[in-house]
Image 1 (tube, rainbow over the protein chains, first blue to last red):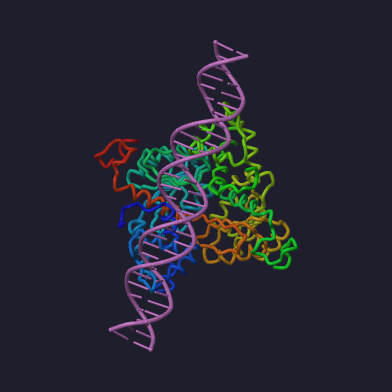
Image 2: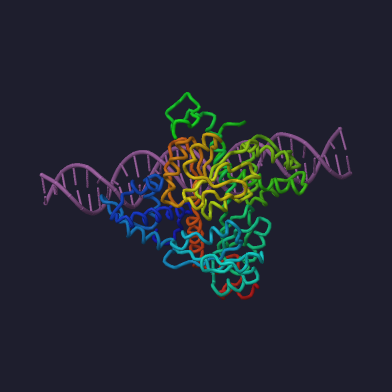
Length: 231
Length: 231
DNA sequence: AACCGCTTGTGAACGCAGGAACAAAGTCGC
DNA sequence: GCGACTTTGTTCCTGCGTTCACAAGCGGTT
């Protein structure tokens, strides 16, 4: 139960959330937190949070709670954040530009070491302190930087080809924003972020509970509440 | 088993993926597909796919497969795509601009009816055929358009306030890109897309299977494989 | 020094999702 | 017209994730 009995994937995702909350608490000067408070801030069940944390050994004090900075460092260590991860980003359209300029990655140990695009119009632009490079230089940069994470923000038609190129050059993890299901060789992790799917799930869940608009949240049960009174 | 015994959320997400694949197949002129082929294209198990599809009643022909266009329409109907969903987008930074300009939403029945930003520098810009409006007009637009979906792409500090404003005005579903856990009243669906979390999970899974680089995918067991041979 | 309240960590039950195997049903070939 | 093949729809089972509930341990107090 120490280090390698495998941590469930769902737990890992939540650990990342706890880490974010703890970082905020540490910046606020908080010394300790209880599981209840932390769970509330992370939007999960307190018991589940304690079980998640139990995967990395005892790290709290009974009767007191968790020491914020200690727990933060512990989670950061488990998630492998002590060493920065080099990433390459392929596809510098609107979304790719947003990702390249997003500051939230650097704070969490992820650094883009190369931006690539097939369009000559994009090549040569600078985003932050990185130039957009042509696809021909992808293999070269991957060999030099040993980047292990590739982010795909290209149109759907070329995403599979980019994926093949990345994996062939040794990339072991891929974050894909293109709306296609990628097939990658075994040993390569692929995570898909499909914005349309998110919206469709959201709309369906709303529709599923929609037939009863007199829900709990709004206190007025009869009127259709045309949002007139709130402004 | 007809319409409302509740479809599992995981199934709904996959249905959206099937829908995307089917749309592509229909455009290619394909008449029928088997569950095996469709499952392969969607990256899931054939049995699981058939189970997912069983939630919406029998829709295939034994010995033949599924009729592409029929199945597509059926799924589209279940997901509520026959009627367009009006969305508002708050926070027109890099990411917000990318979302506003992304064409993948309109094709799937989601339409932005309002773009909002607190910064006067952004207000008045046009993205596509929509102007960026000040936050003061949010309630008004929500009341007029009856938009039920709100997308938050603001900095983390103001996301909760925006969420409160959206829910107070009747928005029932929220897609949040800000790295904070939102608290919303009951009856409001919130989906979180946290790009850093995705990267951290990816990096952890890689690290977890990393200590054994002689994995299944690469046939070479000894060398460190400095990515030289593939290009 | 002993008690009491608070909080963690763990064990057990519940429910759900995923995968494999089987039966029903329809089509194609003879 | 009949048999065999193909593919769906379903059922069972295994494993995982989540939740509830309890025992163990620590700090503060008297």
